[in-house]
Length: 151
Image (tube, rainbow, N blue to C red):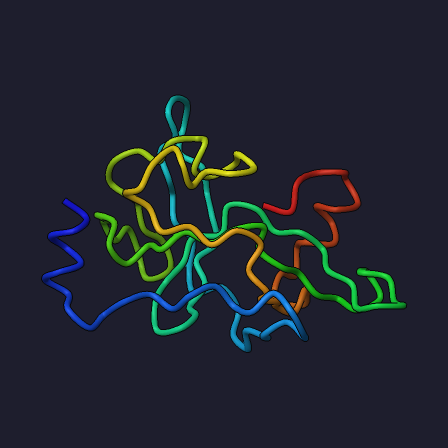
């Protein structure tokens, strides 16, 4: 099915992962909206959606990022642990800044260290060399102070 979709889209191909060598590419706008994703079981999981390379990407987990010689908290940067192409997945708009992904995404795609061999229906870039200003999330510091996840 994915191959048919790719053929129909023709020239619309997602960009390759950002070059791992060198300075991270900075995303200059805050997350576009929140997507609610159904996992293998349990309630939907809220994820940030970013725009990069002309496409929209799910970010299941953020990690703090530091430049050489400086602490991550000092810099105020976050980097996605992985990004998953959203544009080709079925979705339903809930509001201006929220959508529901129709269908389930396996937990392995979202959280396993190497999801690529498990399912070829998803475009996943692991640890892309992208960064975003931490200041885009006003409630993030309170979450981190409570020892909770960055999501």
